[in-house]
Length: 381
Ligand SMILES: *Cc1c(COP(=O)(O)O)cnc(C)c1O
Image (cartoon, rainbow, N blue to C red; front, side, top):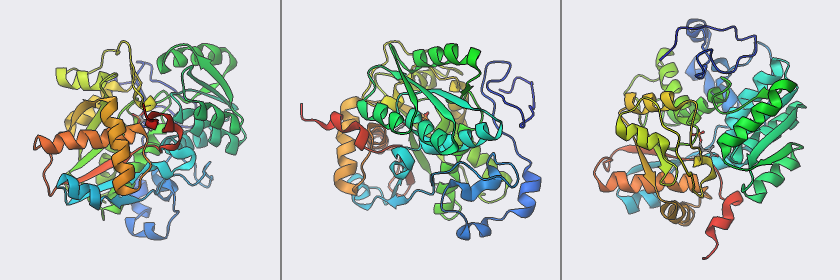
């Protein structure tokens, strides 16, 4: 719930609210709606910046972009036939710069950080956020400091270095990396782009929602299944639902949102099942899906609220099932999925088996990242 502080001036740097919770960007929808029509979109940018009026871009400014977003929404006909679903879709975020949907959030956050005069950016990351931040910082000419767990896979480290980032490996998990990044960066004035600790990564990620609605001819699917770590994607897609209603572009029922986590790290699932408003930190987090190895998320309350308001749910799947379903996506649909993408299919199988999802429901799986940096999980035992 809003704590009552704010609104804050968007022309100044802000991170968390005074209450310690995330800040979300607000827009003047009346002004935007008066001059922006969805009919203008077909000729627009073939990136997430096609929605520039709803993004944190100063009038007349150009974004820091590498072509992120406007990813295809593939009808998954072979997989759908196997599952008995007539209208299954996969949104393939692996086609983004640096191979994951983290590009969207970083394009928006780095655009804003650059406009606000930041010179050094820092981020704790399980891997993909660091790679994306490094690439956008390079594009904008800013210095990048990334902090990752010591056991992160080598391709993530090399990709950050490729983009000129300074890489620190940390003993522990992403939460430890976050603490160390903040301790080092605060006295030096680094601009922290941690998930939900600045307001603009959500703005980039909400464009997944805008695109799904546009690609389904301005309607929502019945279900969106999303692998949840820090939760920016869920929060962003739910924000898109509200904004598209305000613009009057989508009027039908909103989608039910499903968060998928790993059995070895499922703080949101546990809190959802308990009916709690916030999530207890998960002890001993372990999973091959690096993006899901997030034991505590600052936006937990926002994620749980979005799941409940949407009439959705949360479930945990095993690493074995994720990897099995990475293979299924690769075999049946030609999609190179990260384990997180495999996790959405594993969850879908369960929701079809227990009758929650019906054969006529429109279902969108978010393949949030590509397989290439995770090939080691496919090694024969
Ligand atoms: C970061 C990440 C996630 C988790 O995303 P959130 O929006 O922070 O919950 C899922 N999948 C992949 C591939 C990721 O890199």
